[in-house]
Length: 187
Length: 175
Image (cartoon, rainbow over all chains, first blue to last red; front, side, top):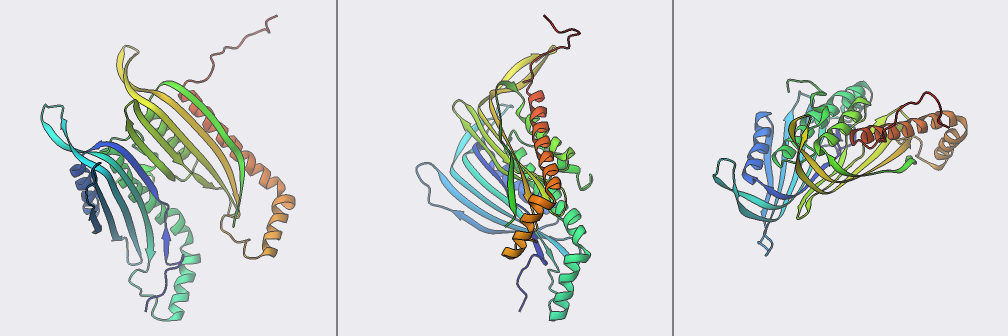
């Protein structure tokens, strides 16, 4: 039996939200987001895809995505996305080159969050002594590394980058963020 | 529970005219980055309406000052009826935004954010004793930092939106 999750073996980051009402390219948004996970070698799961019965205002869809990646033997990053579209219906859009494409008009609600998990292979849970040793290690030995390095990597390099990608695809005014190179330029 | 003190309560700025929305968000972001604040955006809403875009953006950046004090801000931006307009600036055509912008700034100081002194009533009493009497100068100095940061950001945004009144130095006081 595995031990319960405590603040010493997993740590959450805050949640960022997007609410948008307008016209967007759903196919492009979906592909870009999944591609982002694929390129960054995440294990990606679409846990829920719910297509609700269309109302007179449009279609309601729900997506729950989860992705995780092993950073090293001890640490792994988990990203969770909740994605809900309301009143969505297809509209024809005239592009700059004169061609027409089918876009989606409606409302979107998105939530992005994540957590850092330590010892996700549960190597240090076989005995109570190992478990206490791991707690001491997490609490005192790697405390600064957790707070100042890994947390920033997950929050700014992973989650905010994906968040910014969605803002760009939706052409939101608040796109871009200053922390984009905070944890390095090449990733 | 940790104690949260409201230091700056609803510093308000109201503006109507031409601006660049993306520049406004980036200016806040870069200011927070320079000052070492952590980023936390709670609301990022954007609606296309018949009269233009409506936006609501709310952020709660924070900065750990010590192991005991944490500085927090709340920045709330409301933009009404934002439309794109073409303007000529220094002989070049630019695309800017026009609309009404309301910005609220709040500043908070959180004490004992790691919840080390709220396990029981005795610890809380000791904490209060230290906050209010023994370490009162530290608490006050950190309160001043919150006030300074809020006003500095307010001033920075006023400059960006060109809200400052034009003035020039005079050598002698006019009669």
